[in-house]
Length: 160
Length: 105
Image (cartoon, rainbow over all chains, first blue to last red):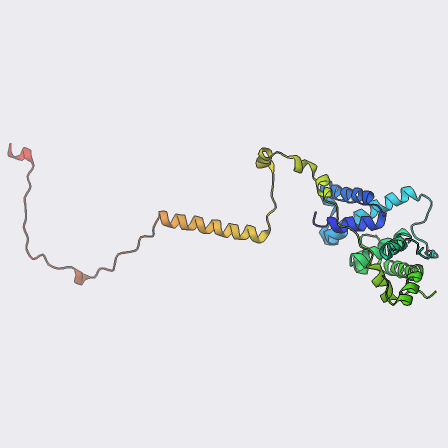
């Protein structure tokens, strides 16, 4: 259970629900306990493997709720954040959650879990070039979506 | 409206913090282990021991065994070397004849 925090954090950011994140994390570890042979240490560290399982479960949950939406869309433009909630952390979370799932998972693994492009490529089952392009689009989308916060930051010197 | 630059975005992203895993998660994953009675645990339970601790324990155990064996069977040291000069002629010989009792009968 050494990686439980990393797996839970990832699931929480992907699902936007503490209950769903706990379900995903629980399923990840139960899957590993029941089928430990699925983990091949020559293909990468255990953490990447567990995150990969969490990623598949989170996408499955997302797919159940968004049956007809694409997992990624190159032309997708994230909407500008609504400043009404006021809390910057919440606004940032909302902007990340508004990203298409494949961009979101790439951004979460790179920014919050410190994975390199090669390390992200393994659990998301894509090559490094694709991961790099998704990360670029995710960051571009967020730069635009969070622009209203920048306006406030510049006006007040620093965001509160 | 100007979009954020890379540094500003990174700084903002790190304001969104995720909570740690709930305490109940481990219990949900290992419910059987949590409920195992201690008597059953003594028969079928297991503990994880870090390799350095196991190595130290093994060395200590081995040393104890070697020490106890060496105390039980002390090593016999050979006597000091004997040379011919240590042999002396007998100065006074007092032979004593011992007869058995039935010889007199």
